[in-house]
Structures are given as structure tokens and as C-alpha cells.
Amino acid sequence: MAKTVRIGCGAGFWGDTPEGPAQLVRSGDIDYLVLDYLAEITMSILARMKARRPEFGYATDFVSMVAAPLAQEIANKGIRIVTNAGGVNLEACRDALSAAFEKAGVDLKIAIVRGDDLSGQSDRFHASGAREMFSGAPLPAELASVNAYLGAFPIAKALAEGADIVLTGRATDSALALGPLIHEFGWGAADYDRLAAGSLAGHVLECGTQATGGIFTDWRDVEGWDRMGFPIAECHEDGSFDLTKPEGTGGLVSPMTVAEQIVYEIGDPAAYVLPDVICDFSEVRLSQAGRDRVRVKGAHGRAPTSSYKVSATYADGYRAGVTMMIAGNEAVAKAEAVGAAILSRASRLMKAEGHADFSETSVEVLGGESTYGAHSTAHDAREVILKIAVRHDEKAALKIFAREIYPAATAMAQGLTGFAGGRPDPQPVIRLFSFLVDKADVPVEIEIDGRRISVPIAAGEQETQPAAPAAGLADEVRQAGSTVEVPLLAIAHGRSGDKGDIANIGILARRPEFAPVIRNAVTEDTVRDYFSHIVKGKVERFDWPGLNGFNFLLHGGLGGGGIASLRHDPQGKTYAQMLLDLPVDIPVAWLDNDAPLANWSTDEIRQEVIA
Image (cartoon, rainbow, N blue to C red; front, side, top):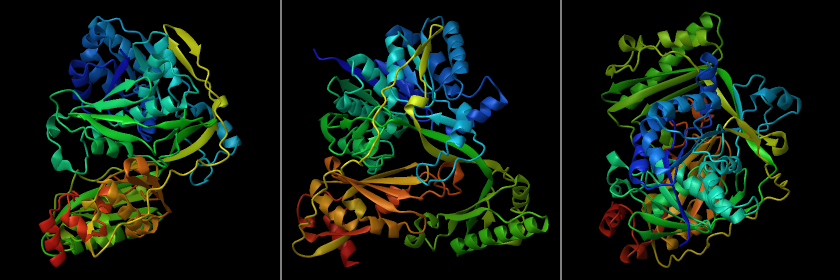
């Protein structure tokens, strides 16, 4: 019988529910439990924690809420764990874990993967003239954290040395699942197609319930939000896998729930660059293989580059923000006026005390559809939330802003209430700086049983030519006869996410015949114009023929991204939903066949057209 390796993901971020790993350990029948705790900005937060208290700097939830309460069951079932919970303090995480296992009376072998922390090499990076890989900006003088994205082979080595628990710092999210597959199936550094397929399994798993019906476009189709099933990949030696979830849990596993996760936070689907392989996901195919079970195959790969991506973070002044409710007639206009007045007042008083003006300001009227810009249809809303956010190089200047917010309660618009949280305390602005380093300059090792073992990493290849673009979807649009205008949502799914200051929006046709219409209607220029109020850079579109879809990259689309952004949505989570409102023309003939138009019956569309 062919070997199958079952990998479950019990955490998609630091703060995810501990019910996930408990569910998988107790009812998932898994071989491996992977837990992804680290986001790009998390490293700087952990670095600050460690600077204040040397025993911190790792994802403490892993020890206290996962490993300690589940220790006996993990040991009894022989489940092995791979997690990046080590953060910037692998040793402290290991020691806390060892203490928890000793208290639980279990003997589990722990390995740590070292090499990602490059903070001690900052001077070398400055001397070599390191540049930001997207903007070309020079490396900032002071860095809060510097971490390379390591690959999966060190994890595989730790497992081969007998580790029950593998702790990493910064590694690619997908490596947490790829490492066990390399170990179990004996894949080598040149098995590019299989490494790409294993990376795809890790990518689908890495965000937890996002692959099992979470944040799904057709949300009404998903039952059981209160008991969502966490994802399990049943992986085979050829790289194909089935995505499923524990029996009796909430959620939905269908080709579209899985497809939405595949397009999440991806750039060019034909050239997804990872440390171990450059993946081509453009021809991936999905099929329903049973209830809540989807078969995934078709990933390809080629040799990786000779570089690691490095994420550094640095402080760039301070930020502060506040929200308040405004109700009544002309609520949107009143909120905009209040926001402008508070900023004007604070700016005047700051200058009077010798401070410069704000570095950046943001006023958003939530409920008035500020995020939609000119596409807002909520100008007459009678109840809104005013959100004001500001940035300044000096903390003292933002203290003035903080004290001048509440005079609005008696001096400005009627219907103003619900100030949230008292005077805001200015917080550091942390920005991301991404650059490349040669793999040869990053030694990697594992430590297990008191032994340090060097892990050789394949050198990779210098990229001289960009990858050939994915084969495009057909341009032909069969539109004999007249057309009717519907929202893009009627013929497509969507999901959006972020990488630094770049937003991505994946758009997936509900049926293959809808793809040419989408291709012609939703162009780079169309998307750039639609988001012109928030996107400062170019827009790129990539065809995704295997999924009958497209991926859009919106450069400079997030106001800096992460906690550097003053926006209420700094990660582009709303962007797909906004784009799905885009009007597109479809053949009227589609109303008279069996093509499913989401949330739109034939009668509803006809009524909309008449109206």
C-alpha cells in the first residue's frame, strides 16, 4: 500500500485558537502537527520582548496553550510537531518546552534550527550596500530585527536525527510542512516538482481554517463557524495530496475554498520563489474527491535561486489613532468635518510648541465606505465610526494630538459619542525592509541532544532570465447577441492579502467559460483605476489557467503595509470584496442556461437590468 503522510495545521497566526491543535491531535489521526505563528512584523515585536525580558522573544502560546496541555496525547500517539514558535529566542522556547514536558512526565526530543537570525551581521550588510528588493532604498541605519527565510531541509535533518519537536525561527511558512515530506519520502534537493508540490501543500495548510471555508467568498455555503475544522493534507510520494478536515467539524472543503487559499498572498503563480525551489502553480488542478475532500496536483518546480530573502524591520517614528461614533443626519459629512478639525487643531498647537507638522495623517469614515473611494454608495449613512490616525517623528508631538481629541465632544458635531479606549498612547511605527543575501553567507545548523550539526544547503542558481509567463487563458469571448451588466461577484470568487506594501487579489472564474469575460473586463488598467484612491504604484496581472483565474499585484497599495500603515485595513483583506463589486458585461444568453451566477437568480438579474 502506498505511503500516506497526514499533516495537520493547528495555527495560522500567533493568537489562533488552541482548539485547533487540540482538535487535530484528538480527532485528526495526523502524523505531524505544524503550527505557524510568525508574520513579517512579528519578529520585531518578539525582538522588543526579548530586549525587555531575556526569557521572552518566542510564541509563548505554543508552550502554555498547546504543548503543555496536549503533551501526554502527543507522546502517546507519536505525533511529531514542527513550528516556528521559536521566534528570536529558540533556546528560551526549548527550555520552557522541556520544563513543560518534564512536568507532564513525557520524554520528547526537541531540536532547534539556527541560522535565520542575521542581526549580528548588520554592519556587513551596510558595508555591502544592501538595497530594498522592491524599492531600491538603502538599508536603514538602525535595525530592530534581521531574519532570513530558511527552507525545509534543516527541518528534515532534525527529523532524521530523531526529533519529536522541531523549533525554528524565521522559515518560510510552507517549509513547516515540506520538511516532514522531505524526511518521510526521501526527496532530494533536485526533486523540484515534488518539492514544489510539497510547498503547495504547506501553502494551503499554513493559514489554518482559511483553507476549510474560512473567509470564503460564498460565506453562506459554510456552516459551523463556531467549530471550524482545521486543515489536514494527506500527502503522497508523487507530491499530490488530498485536503480535508476532521470529521464532524464545521467548515467546507471544496475546490473553490482550496483555490481561494492557493491564490492568497502569491505573486506570479508560475514563479513563486522559495528557498528550496521556484514553484510553478499555474497549472495546478483541483477536484472534489469526496465529502470535504479535495485532490490537489499539477505543481511543478525548477532550481531555486542562490539567495535567501531577508526581512529586516526598523523603527520610523510614532503613530497614534482614535475612533468615535457619529450618528444622525449627514453623519458622513459631519465625521469628515470633525476629523479635519481635530487634525487642524492638533497641528496648530503642535507648531505652537515647536514641533513639525504630522508626517502622515489618515481620516476614514467606517460605514461611509471610505475604503471604496469614489465607489462609495453610503454617503447617506446615519451611523458611522470616525477613525483618525497620525504619524510623527516625535512621541511628544503625538501627546498633543492625544489630548486634543476629546474637546470635540463639546465643541464639534452633535451625535458624537463612543470614544474608544481613552487618550491614545503613541506607539512605534515599525517598517519592513526586504533584501537578498547569498545562501553561502548564511550557515545553518540544528541542535539536538546537545549536539550541533551543520546542515549543507544547495547553492541554487543565479537567475539570468525571468520565467516564461504562464500560458494565457483564451481571449475569445462568446458574446453573440446583447449583454447585461452584473457585478464581478456573479461570475467570480476572490481573495486578497498582502506582502509588505504590495496587495494581491486573486480572482477565480466560477466556470471556465467565464474566464475570457473576466480577462477582457478586469485588466491591469481597470484595476488600477478602480483602486486609484489607495494604490500608488503599478498593477500587474498574471494568468492562472489551471484555476481559471488571475492574480493581481497592487504595488504601493497598503499605505506602507502592516503596522507601518495608518489605514484600518493595512493588509488588503477587503480588496477582493471591493473588486467583486466591479460591473462587468456578460452575454444575456447566460441567463437562459445553467451557468450559476452567484447570489443572482435569472429573475433578479432581469429586474436589476430593468431598474
